[in-house]
Length: 225
Image: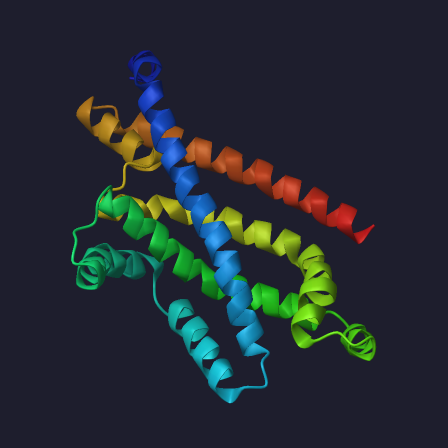
């Protein structure tokens, strides 16, 4: 079985690489978008405005209370409908990929928001008070003083959450995205080599996650120094 698997793997490797690139696109898009939206949500949570605080808190609690697979299914059906309602046109491109990218971005934003909020709160109030004493506005203080220090502290946590995002990306299998796992599963099922392909896919995810985790731990030690 495994000899046939290795022989078939050499032929199918380009398609697996295409699937892996798709996985990376989803992870990178969701990580960048999630951090940006999460930062806005964190600032809203820390705002003195009760309305902004309530909206951000509701958003975070909502997405952290719903299974990711359910969110993926929602957006898989909702994104084309909303896009058509707003623009009057059908979604052009890979609907499943776009839906997955949007779902992961908005879902991860809730988790990134809490990381960013904790990072901001870890900066002493003396920093902001000193900035205000120099005549800086709230926006300038956050952009130039607080957020750079906060992001330096919370970088390991953001990267750790990105590793979890990478692992969770296998769930896009449920909506038909041809990511690395889906490509492996389909090929294994087609060639009656399902077990070797699933084991191989698991080994790839495990290896990348372990290497990334050790890299984050090393980075965390360097930042402490």
